[in-house]
Image 1: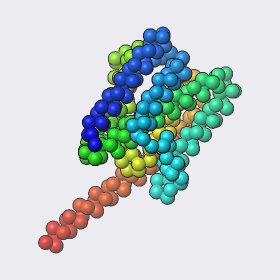
Image 2 (image 1 turned 30 degrees about the horizontal axis):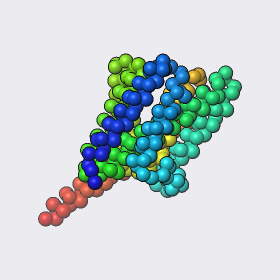
Image 3 (image 1 turned 30 degrees about the vertical axis):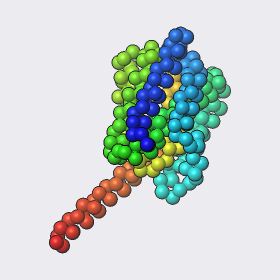
Image 4 (image 1 turned 135 degrees about the vertical axis):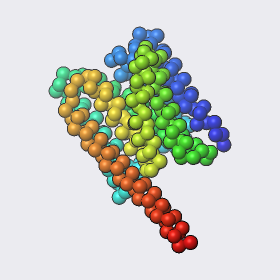
Amino acid sequence: MNKNKIYIYPIIYFLLSLLGFGILYKMGIEYDDPKIHYAAIPMMLIIAGFVYKINGDKLIDLNELKPKKEYLGLNFIPFITMLLVLFTIFESFTNEVESRKVIWAFILTFLIGFSEEKMFRQFIFEEGKKFYSKRFLFLYSTIAFSLVHMANMASGLDFKSAALQSIVSLPVGLLAAFLYIETKNISALIFWHMSIDYSLFLRELGVFKTELIFSKIIDKILIIITVLLLIKKLKIYLSNRFSIFNNLTLD
């Protein structure tokens, strides 16, 4: 066992991202270049392969996709995300957007979602729990996830824009870490993450009505589940507090 793995492997992830973006930049493909939708796929395949190897498990746990009574909506996110992809591909045939660009966006954003959630949620929490508290891993995974976006500077993105991306990613990292701690449903997080990036890519290509509909559905599911989880946590906290108070009273 090596407790430094949760520090070393994210650094390797960051360096691979730097290298990949640096190569693309040398090829004349910058971060805001539409060509990056397909040009970044080989880089993300390598990173996804690295993340898959260090996790040493299945690409997607099919058991997580089976409907469960508790937090049922979370199990529907992968399916809703795939419906989002299918409907937007069909829509691309009617709104003068090349369907292949939408397909490239799907492939790239799946690889991004898979790589980042497997690394910054599953690996850090499952490897780190042997040595660190959940509270520490919650904060560390969120910060590491935020900072990895600074690697985008290697593709020509200026410091201010990269820093803004890092700041904007903090709430996503906090929520993803919280959901992983409470549910361990990495598949739902992968597809949720993918849906966020996929929607951003689509909005660069044009207006997709189906994207707006499915994105709202996913957002509402996550809001409801997060509220339910917070209520559950609050009930447990209050129950423990009242239990301690009652014990003191009886004494």
